[in-house]
Length: 438
Image (cartoon, rainbow, N blue to C red):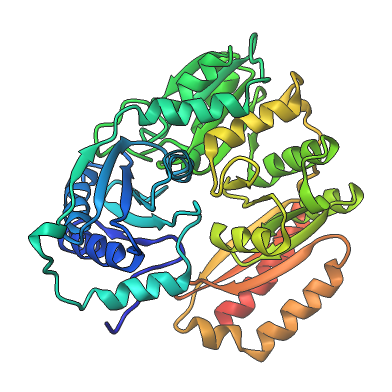
């Protein structure tokens, strides 16, 4: 094909341009052919609230049916509902139509296998190869497309079962649903568990998903929490697989801090297999310090929740996450689940205040993206390699330096963590100047 469609989280791009109806139909057909074994696959399809979702849903369903699969349309649901419903119904695959935290103009197509995990690189490559095969199928093998009713209630039931012992009575919660896939599920489960709930960004119109709201604009939530006298606030992203928080003082609590609170809770409860947690290279140095003090092992991966998941599966661990708010807790779900993560944080707090959280001391962090003509050449420059090593040695045991190329743009990302803002700024400024000098 000359190019690889699948990225680290399915196929994603501008709807109608990169992610077209033709592509959705072709991928539906090819994936069904690849996953077919001794019976016609049953495939669940869910989506977020983007206006292009209906078009892609129809095209994808047509492709699956054309290859003999049975399509179950689950409607608008958070991404983490897909693996949970796969398990509940014994489906052969699930497809989520979403571009997560991206603006409404984008959309994406991501597949989950029967085990509830995202497809492997090998299976995705095999699906791409099948895109070149003929699209015809005998009329006797054409599948059906059906609505699957009650999917929201099924997802809520899974959450309610998992958190049956969590009593949120007396807890005043503000939720930002990003005008996305959590707009019904999140408020409902918090209310069922007894919380007093105020909701913002819960009126999707197809175009307002992630628009000045949600986990990519968490500062707005933080201000509202403090102004409204709420105990805590949670902001989800468009497809509901990540969450960030704000405490009652209006301080933003990122994924690293949430993960630290959860890790200590699960370890104390005897529910942290291997006494280990997996994170990415972007995770704050303060997290590593806190976990070392608690004698919890930390595995570090490349950026991306799929790499965190790979590390967990390799080690037999259950907990991992990213600074951006992805938290994977394999005891409940095989992917990041923003709503479950928020509830797990409240379970860990056991009625105490998030503002008084026990977890980690976050080091000041400075991150600068430096445009360059050639990121690979910039990264190989001796002056930068020497400076990064020198600055890293100077911060050893107190902080760290991370210089890495962007995976998608001609950028070099310079990140510095140090005990003080002034030192972080100074080290970062010196490294950025070397990158810019070429």
